[in-house]
Amino acid sequence: MARLHLFEFEDQAWFPDFLRDYMTAFLQFLANTTKLFKPAIPILEEALRSSASPTIIDLGSGGGGGLIWINQALKNSIPDLTIVLTDLYPNLAAFESTRAKASNIEFVTAPVDARNIPVNLVGLRTQFLSFHHFKPVDAQRILQDAVDAESPIAIFEAQERSLPSVLAMMLSPITVFLVTPFIRPFTVGRIVFTYLIPLVPLFVLWDGVVSSLRTYSVSEMKNLVAGINGSESYDWKIGRIRSGPGAILYLWGRSKND
Image (cartoon, rainbow, N blue to C red; front, side, top):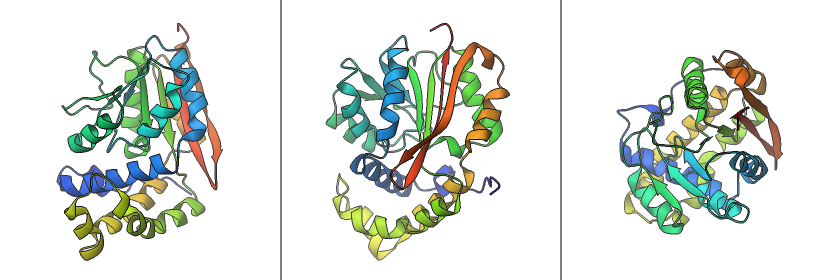
């Protein structure tokens, strides 16, 4: 199945912030409740131990992703862990809610472009469910920026470009309907735009299917890395981990000087 970089509503600057926030809050709830990134914990532990700082700089955080559960899982082995949430369209209400659940989680209020990270943000750069949003030239810029800064980077996707993944995404409106009453903080608007005017499940459906069609395969991620200036100065691990009925695709790179 060829990669198709169709548009996602969540990416559009004109897309209403409140709808984007409802969508990212749904993804955050699902990721934390299902422990979606449990197979990634050993990779994150190794990456943090080899990093100069026990800090995660999360890029494209959306509503915080599965970082609440990830933080709990990592604190056992990395007790001085700090997580910093960033996004090009920061959902400050979701960031505040996430920080309220864990004192070691911080966030940046200003927009942060994953292709050009401010020099003051130092640590292991991570992306969960966001790398597919970028076209190949921009995906390479993200990796190039990490290499230029000699920063470790770890990228994880929980969907694949496959028929089973696309079919699973087509069931997402049912999941939205079922879990929305349990998402916190509770808002009347989320209820209205889920059940009375069902824009949220429709947009989640579209963006979910498109996310699968946009996801880079293991071989494509290897090709992205091969095109980076100075890629030979890094150790790269790229692969696929089984996760329940699906899989986690990952790309992890660290400087050979670390």
